[in-house]
Length: 582
Image (cartoon, rainbow, N blue to C red; front, side):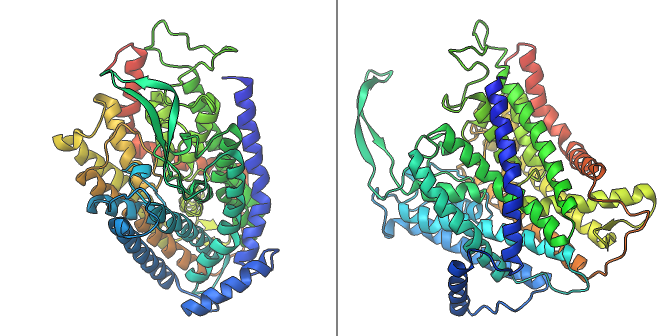
């Protein structure tokens, strides 16, 4: 752990804080149909879209209609991507002549990108064409992110409104999230990435001559290398701002064509948290309680700093099983556990990126999580298991934390023996039931699929490591799928019929079965009358509330997942500390 590493973490934290207010104000303004500086460009395009699609932008939807529109849009989008993948060998912009993907892989990939998970059970640069990357995958990067933002705004409206039956219009919210936010930001960010060396072209793959020929173990000499080309920067921008995470290359953001410099690395990390951080300010502004928005931001920030510090500490101490190896930091070496990490990013840049991408439902990686120390890898896993509510994905993190807020104020109400209230709305049995349903969906999916996978011999054949680390690989995969994260402990071969199918179901259920009870809560809150605060009302804009919110999140996670964590990363850490290799 170095001063330079702490400086990097501090600058990143301050940058996230600085972006929260201006971005939060901007989002609140255009979602509330207030005039913004971007209206002269976006408003005419918006009118054309509504005219072509026959959308009545004045029409408000009940939560059931809002949810039905979202589901129908997602189903159609998923089917279109499935067709793209199966028939890409008949379509243009395929200079490498890649064949269509297998049915199970196509289903898995279509489910993955529709749900904003971007789990990739394939090698992108040898599997998907340029057209599939742009019109299939990048399209879903935009719309799945826009759907998440729209749902978060709908939930916030449910809290802010009173005695109303509607929570907005899905088509309008999704269109505005795309036109006013995602498209302009990503166009600008793509240009910045190109300036750093990220590729953006439609050229065929290039064969180059190696500076130094390589000799393989069988004596064969290789003097050339094929370099993948493609429209990388445009996909990289929305991959990060939309917290999608699916890379153009198999190495993801560890690849120098996706993330070439320390500056691009910093900006990509910042892009992951920019919109989720801003949404906390949007929450405060739209509900009329800005202090509450900052209290939520503070709770997220503390959890992020604790997790990030733990990962940095674990990776800086190195591997105790490497006897006789100097793992100390010096002027000539970074020290610590550098396995699976890029030298240009180092321990701090890798640990910070890994923490951010698992706090959010992003899943992009600039290092291999499978190579992290047991405790470092456990933090990344726990970030996902907590529901990725520490800033979280675009929109998904906000409505995820709001579910925990409902539970927190309910518990606070039990403590003082009165009906709990949240920003002037009484939290009743229906709200708590829906909140618990949303919270229980993830552990049900993760633990059931993991349990089946570890008792069936043919499914165990996919892991590269036996013992506790092998359990962690399987557990991480289903946690990543249900949590719509998409990162992986890469020692698991997931491109099999079992894992493609179950992970596809895992991702779909993890996304949509949580959304339905969330929308039900939003609709129910919008119908309620506001009640004035009383001496018994639990304030939700204080440090006490932030501490209680963090406690509820951690306790729910610990009670749910501690047994399997103790058999995976905790056991692996104890064995490693004892000098044993399983």
